Image 1 (spheres, rainbow, N blue to C red):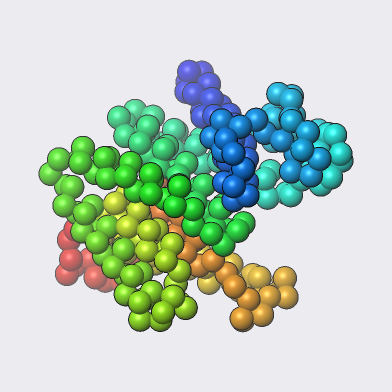
Image 2 (image 1 turned 180 degrees about the vertical axis):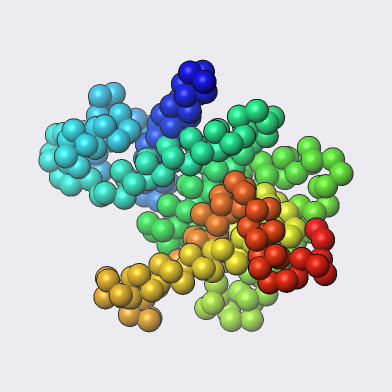
Length: 261
Ligand SMILES: [Zn+2]
């Protein structure tokens, strides 16, 4: 029991550290800073290179009261949320999958999806330097799946195709080109038919967020919302317990008696 608790705390800390690194990575990639992979973290305002004690996930933000320790400019609260989300997600996945050999590829997949989500959410951008390696890694994982790998390739074809068709019909107005990559990636990670569950959950999350923004943040109906970004939290939910959601839907809709996946 103690060993398990230590493992879970370790997973949470690993998640927050990776979250802290990823927040800086997203910032450096977006602003095309050199050394985006190895560069030292600096304050975007005063350019001071941060010391190791400024880089404790969550704690540094809390002790510095959300401000840079050097120039006292506010650090956006989203970076605190990001580290917390990374920590909690890693904790949940390690808690559920720690006895499975898939725990490592799952954590890598979750990492990639969280980076793509926060990137798209913050900057309305899909960075090819993240999404293409993510797709290649997902391909590698799929080919370790032996009998079931065709379901994942079908998922990728349907996921990519679903967005590609919308992209070409609307001339890029309904969905962005980046959403095609998201469709392929999530199809590879989830396979058929879980990809459908993911699209469904993403749509629900998008609608809830849109309603919230319109109700409380004075967003108009024309305000942009990166709908594709919600594929990532939906994908993480499906990686965690997608079959449970699928069973729930099939039972609830009465379709379960006609289909068995
Ligand atoms: Zn500063």
